Length: 132
Length: 127
Image (cartoon, rainbow over all chains, first blue to last red; front, top):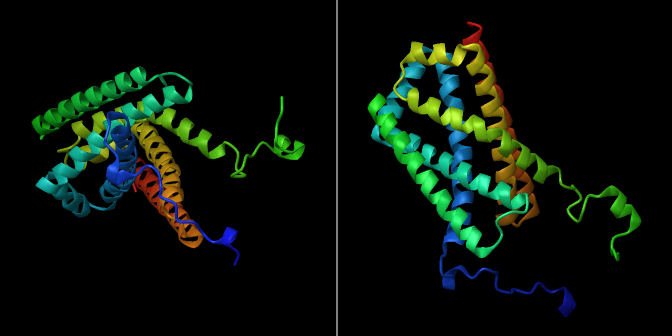
């Protein structure tokens, strides 16, 4: 094997150990994380209709989990992920269309996403808790 | 204008990944479709969070909800599959594992999607 063919172990960028978090990078990572969580959550919600179709017993089992503390955290967490990914996804679509690339605009849209998803999440949690 | 691509590559328009913009475009189209669907679904989820068996089934089985629910689940799973594929392509480096995981994600999405559609139709048409 010649020297040119040997794999070179160069450091990967960005260097996460020495990387100062900033709004833009944190929101970018969060978009991926919530996307992964929502994919798993989609299977959970598909299970909900499957159990509703199966029998009253399986549905009751599923609902009793939903009503438990863990179930509330899962559903509440799903709502946050959905609102965040939705708001930041719209931000991404604007970028795809060629708008909002200036640093100032990227920060402004980032804070709008934070505010919108936080408000939507809190409102949905309060509404959900009052309805049960 | 100088272009380093061969005329054939330009005619094919598939780029270096040899798949063109198909994946990218599908991800955006499903994203746009999901904007109203997810808003509707999130509100419904909150309204139904304490619903018993009969209320939940009556809701799932009404014609408009059946259509919207099937759209949400199918488009949502498709969008999720496209997104997870990119995550796998980014972080899984062995070609074998990469392919196996992408195929597995797609299988799971299709199985759950089909099962959910059958369940919704069964509730709606009284099985």
